[in-house]
Length: 54
Image (cartoon, rainbow, N blue to C red):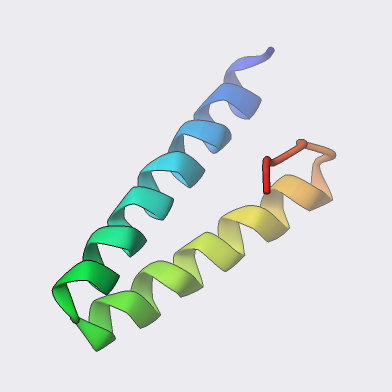
């Protein structure tokens, strides 16, 4: 796995964790921010052929 793929997957995992925390805290604004970031990262992964788990 190259550095780009590893870094992207790590950012996705971190963002998923942050999103879960925001949901648990009931922080609607932060949920929107984290969901947007996650959507962007997943789109970037798809554009570069990086397989992301479900």
